[in-house]
Length: 159
Image (cartoon, rainbow, N blue to C red; front, side):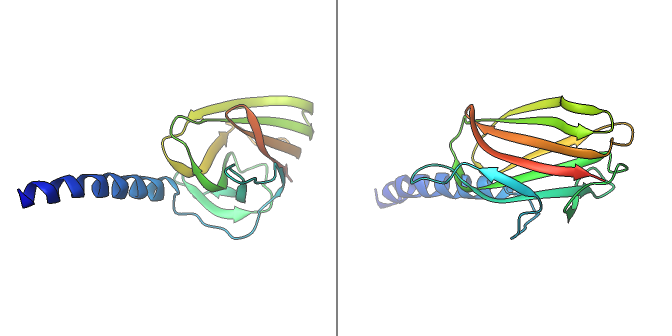
């Protein structure tokens, strides 16, 4: 009987440990304490998700995020973006990244692409943007939505 009670006590602990490990695994290996670009975000309110940090990263040559940068070069054909939130997102939350060229050598106010994902448990939102040729120089933005509410806007340049 005692072993049975211990087993029932361990099940919630194992479930909690699994969630914590999953959240840590989703947070990835790249950390930054400074914002790598200018961004605007909705203020964090009690019980609401806010933005802890934003990073722009060059590709490491193997398709993975590499060095944190302030801006990209035209030859950075694969760009990595990361927004860390101030709290864990709820399972089933919808995240949408909307990328646009604001003012570039190819034109102004052009939508590039939209990336949508569902969250399991995480505080790390990532997106990768790829172009098979050099990027046009100019200014760009990425709007990050959480459950259809604007979480932050990341302004960045290709120069």
